[in-house]
Length: 343
Image (tube, rainbow, N blue to C red; front, side, top):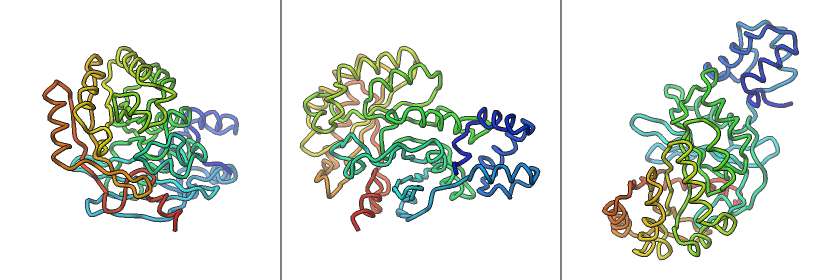
């Protein structure tokens, strides 16, 4: 049995036509799931029991099983879920003053094995379905009760552009007025630099945010940090990003995890300015590395981080420093899943 959350609005309308049901029921069903947050077809009280029975025989609504919740002192919450096949995934709620961000996973494991990220330690298992992605957001929304998810970032475990079709379908449901109605500019796709996927995104005609994990502007160093650079080196990546900006007129955020004695020196800062300066519509988001025991990395000290930021700013870079969240619950990508698996 599959989940009805795999269907977009048009597919649900088509199904109802095939069932010789009235098409307006699609609006009712989507409203119950995405607006009223029900997880049981029997709760859809304005739908005839005969149609509810058809839905129950064909679909379920929710398949994720909650395994564990970890809550930080800063109110960040991390959730570990079990999928139908027993695989584990994570999702995170990050509250702030005027927003609540959901950090969503797109794959079980990750094939790219970045040196600072726990997601790839256990290797890659499979892509998530659209339904599984949607259900992460629905669960987090339901969990909040009095609040709602305002922003969605595809920055959890996995490479979103390696699961392109399922991720884009999920985004369209999240963005849809019939679905969760979260604005495109409040949805961020983060990629390790998968060039073909960036090129495809430039043609989608949606105003979502694009975030590119860069972490070094020196090919040799970036290949050490991110093996994906051996497939899509900086030259190809920057060309794709430049083309994306020209076609969409949208800013790209370049994520830069600062790792002690690897990419935090003056030479690294100079190379970063030289690489990104021609692109114009860019922002650099500095992120102190999260300590991961298995990966043996650590962040520079606070003064070194501030000096790196100041140097970029003085040379015209639009730069921000991400505040670490959930450190006391090891909220970095893949850590909860990794720790649970190692027990």
